[in-house]
Each structure stands twice: as C-alpha cells, then as structure tokens.
Length: 357
Ligand code: NCD
Ligand code: ZN
Image (tube, rainbow, N blue to C red; front, side, top):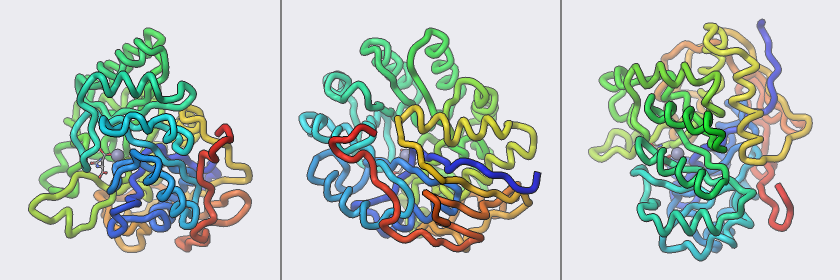
C-alpha cells in the first residue's frame, strides 16, 4: 500500500491562540498546520487571552476567524464561574462547552459544584460538554453525565485508571466519550530526560503502564485521537517557567499511520478515531468533495518546514511511516507536496447562528 486516500480528518482539540497569543499561533498559521497534517476541520479551545467566556470576546474572535481560517473551524466556549449567565448566548456561537476541572495553561478553571450545576442546567442538551478531567475528576464528570443524563466528552485521557473508569461507565451504558493524544500514545515519562520542558504538557506524560493501557483501549473505549495542539515558542519553553503544551497538528496523522504500518492499528480504526467519531460526537457537518492523499513512505519528522508558528515538534528526529501529499477541501487543492494553497478566509466557521450544525 503505497498511496492511501483518507477522508478529511477532524481534530476536536486545538489551541489556535487567538486572541492574545498570536506570537505562538494564529488562525492562519494554525489552520495551515492542520491542512499540512491532513486535518480539514478543527475545534479551537477557549483558554485564550482574554478567554472565550463572554459574547463580546467570542463574537470578535469569530470575526477574526472568518477572515483568516484556511480550513473549517468551530470554537469552544469556556465555562467560568464569573460568567455563567453568558452560557445561553455563548451557545449560539460556539460548537461546544469546555470545562477545565484541573490545572493547565491559563486561568480558566471550575472548582465548585454550583458552577458545574449551572453549566449542566444551562448549556443546550444538543451541544457537547467537554471536560479537562484528570484522576478522580473523571469520576466527577461521569457522575454529572449520569445525574443529568446527557453526553460528556473527556479530553486527552492519559492514565490507566482514567481509561478504566471510562470503560466501566460505558459498560453501564452511560453516554461518555473520550479522546487520546498522539503524544500520550507515543511518549512516556521515560522520554522526559531527553525532552525536558519540550515534553511537558497537561496532562503530563504517563508511565509506560499508562501508555500500554491507552493502546489496549484504542480499539474499544477510546473514541477519538485529538492533538491537543498547544503551541508555545521555544523561548517560552526554554525559560525558567515554561508553559505546558506541545504542538501536534502536523505530526498526528504520520504517527498514527506508523501504528498502522506496524500492525498496532487498522486503517479502518484510524479513520473512526480521526474522522468519523469526532464528527459524530460533536455533531459537525460533513465536508463534501474533501479528502487527503497520503504516501506511505518512511520520513523523518523535522522542525524546519513546519507550518505552526512555534516551529518545533517534540517528535523531531523520529521516523514515521507516511506523509501527507495532497489535501482537497470542498473540491479545491488546499495543500500539495509541502506547498500550502488554501488562502486565509477560505475555511468555514461553525456554527452559523440560527442554523443547526
Ligand atoms: C494547553 C495550552 O497550552 O493551552 N496546554 C497543555 O499542556 N495541554 C492547555 C490544555 O489543553 O490543557
Ligand atoms: Zn488543550
């Protein structure tokens, strides 16, 4: 199998850094990186500066997005105790709600039950609630899912105990779903001496046992692969107080194709994890005449030539099994052999207020 034709891939967890972080990434560079990675549809997280927790900030960000995105984008709204009343109006212009239960980059956090209750009461039932939940916070999310009888999606599940909890909840018939990142599948704590701060992200890298559990559940409990593309500059990462997060849009598909080449994953399952399931879970629109052509050939991941503004990858130097040769989005060639053809503003932004997704 030298050449593969895949559907346009969907990444439900990216940080495109607008507003407030354009020195790390912006909509034009982030969506360029997505296309170079075979991803045609991305959801962007709300932990921006200021965060996407008020209608004003969300509307201004949507305006910038409309003019600059090169692939299709939806924005998450963020849950913030100070702005709970804004949830119904945010819901009109956001694809889903993100609740941060644990510490990570930026100040968005929910640590009290009244705010959680308000989120689950006020956010429209037909739109997803996604959670950054680690360790016992996963049990909190499962409890809310059961109490309110509505779907909950868990972001970047990284530990054996967490994926096992989610497997139990699914066995009970609860509507929980979850994603894993390629960095939690392909790196572990054993890589930290080599990577230093370039291997620091939230959740932190797991033990080899955690990594083995994620692989074991990839064919069953785990619904999606999502990048958690979290670009920071090398200067920031090498500073005394490095922010957590690593980029991932351009390396996700090549890494997962390597798992296919090594017999760890079927191509059918890769398509479920990277296109079919994320689109279904978040209710995202189909993209007609959209596909990705991949050449299955050994290549080395390199920092130069990356489209992400941060310009580095924790996987630099690693050999992977395939490369994205061509991406066609709605009938137009968007990316071809290292050349980006999609113009800023050519992507579509969802949801369109007043229209169902
Ligand atoms: C993310 C970031 O930099 O915005 N960092 C990270 O380590 N994953 C925040 C997040 O997704 O938790
Ligand atoms: Zn994230």
